[in-house]
Length: 332
Image 1 (tube, rainbow, N blue to C red):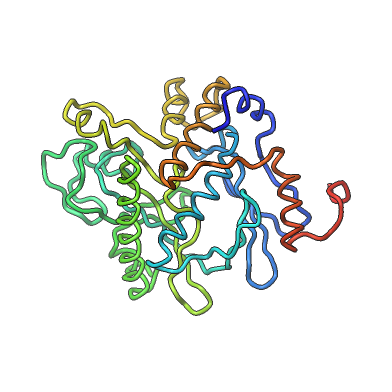
Image 2 (tube, rainbow, N blue to C red):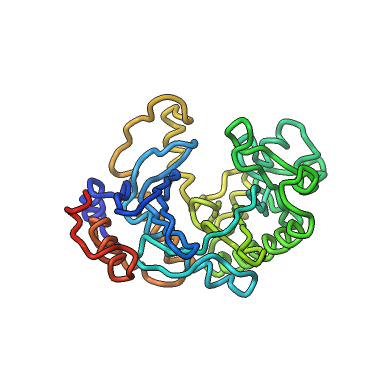
């Protein structure tokens, strides 16, 4: 793992954005993507860190961790269902098959926890007992395991611009996904979550909840897309201390990006207005956390890619035949 001094140096070189000579660039909070010939797409994962629906900073190696960890999970779950991965031309980039995305995000939850408006514990704490179409008994404790994992789908954005809660029945009733496709998605999502929990357990972690995205390929097959079991899309707790902390009424030790969100919250920031300037040590700790998660889950040493990322990315994309053979200065 890179030491603290190296990471501090890299803060000023974090990979914020791409400037490739390809048409149709689109950007999300963390990723940039470009359409390629042959129904393919180039997706580049940057070092941008998002929380509270805002990009709050950049974390060295974060993009590489998310990209390579997702690719690793794609291989670990290929026996459950196909995925969109075609190749990895660079540590921060993948070429994937174009899919027709389903207009539903599938969140699988194994524990009753969370404080956001869509979280199980938040709704339960408000007195709700019928949540996402499931009936919950009285007397549940925050952060305890559910009898079995459940699916809690949401829309993608919805008319308000925010995810809207759905029941599994409403997904079909509202015409968001055909009934037979939705049956497959539910089965695949629960199988993916079981696989994720098994592998996390071997790493000394608890996979608490996660989100999946699915699409249909050209043959109409349900296909896994986006990221899988990363610290951006999932909640992880340390298994070693979970039981004791639960019995004492303490919060589990998180092992994802939650500690960054908590640091901003301690400064009174929850997504409104200009975010506070945070110390370099926070972003260094974030980089170390992402790398540690990668190594714990995969059982492999993280091999850092070189910085600055874009010059390396351009060279690797040329070698893969994705970019034309001309100098970077010619298209800037």
